[in-house]
Image (tube, rainbow, N blue to C red; front, side, top):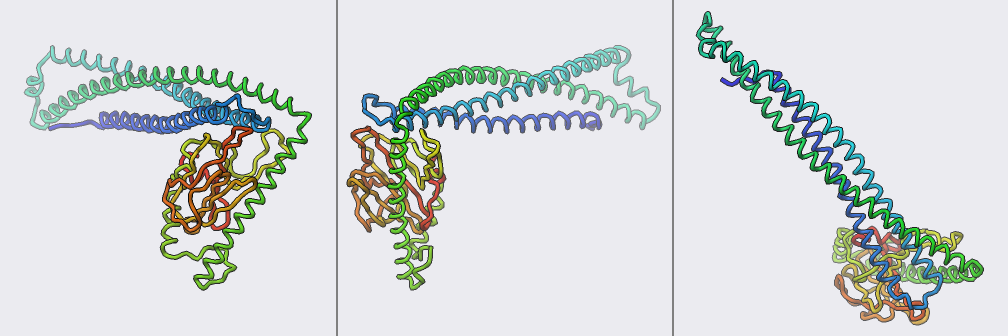
Length: 412
C-alpha cells in the first residue's frame, strides 16, 4: 500500500506552483518580446523601403521641400526603431535580472535538498546496518504495530525517492534557466550594438536636416506659401469627392423610395453583403501599390519644415516606384473617375456603403460602372519629372466620412 505524507504532497505542490508561475511569466515576457521584435523588423524593412523609394535616385533634382519631407520622415521612423529597440533591451534586462534571482534561489534550494538527501541516505544506511526491515517488522508486539511500522517504511522510502526526483527536476530547471540567460545576454548585446549604429545614422540625418532647414531659412515664406497652396488644392479635391459620394447616397435612397436627404446609402442585399465582406477584411486589405511607404499619414499633423502649418489629411500619401500600377484594395464598382489639375486623375470605387479613392494617377484603365475585383489594376501612379517623386493619394470612406487607411490596410 502506497502512502504519501502531507509533507511530501505539499513539497510537490509548491514545486509545481513555482514551475507554473515561472513558465507563465516566461511566456508573457516571450510574447511581448516577440511583438517588439516583429515591430523592430517592420521598422527596419520600412527604412530599407524609404532608402529605395525616396533616396535611390540622388541625381534627381528634387525640390528642397520634398527632400526635407523625406529626411524628416526617415528620422521619424529611425526614432521609432531606436525606441522599440530600447524597449526590447530594457525588457531583456528585466528578464535577465529575474532569471539571475531565480538561479540564485534554485541554487540555494538545490544545496538544501542535496544536504537533506545526504542525511537521509546516511540515516538509512545506519538503520540498515543495525537491523533489517524484516526484523524491524517481526519485532512488533502486535499486528497493528507491524502495520504502522510498514507504513512508516513505505513513507520513508517514498520520501527518499521524491527528494531524488526534486533534486533532478531542479537541476534540469537550473540548466534551462542558465541556457536562457546566456541567450538573453547575447540578444541584448546584439540589440545594444545595433542601436549604436542606428543612433549614429540618426545623428547624421539630424545634421542633414538641420543643414537643409538652414538653407531654406531665407525662403521659408515662399515654401510655406507653396505648401498652403497644395493644401487648398487638396481640400478642393476632397470637397469634390465628398460631393460625388453624397450624390451617390442621395441617388441610392431615391431608387429605394426613401428620403434623398439621408446621410447613409440605401443598400441592396448584394451591396449589404459586399459591405459586410469589406468590414470583415478590416486590417487585412491589400496595399493599393505593390511596393510603397506611407509618407503622409491620416489626420492632422505639422508640416515637416514649417510647424506653423497644420496638414489635415483625409487619407495617406504613399511613395512608390516609377511606373507603379494601382490596384483596387477590394472588389466593388467604379463610382466615379475625375480629373485633378494638370490632367491628373482619380478613381473612386464603391464597396457597399464604403468607398476607396486613388488619386494622382497618370492613366486610368477602368470606366465608371465597371465591376472591379480585388487587386485588379485600375491605373498607374503619376511620376513628377522635375522631382522624380511617385506619390499615390489613397483614402477610405464610410458613407461620406473618411476613415484611417492604416486601420484597413495590412501592416500600414
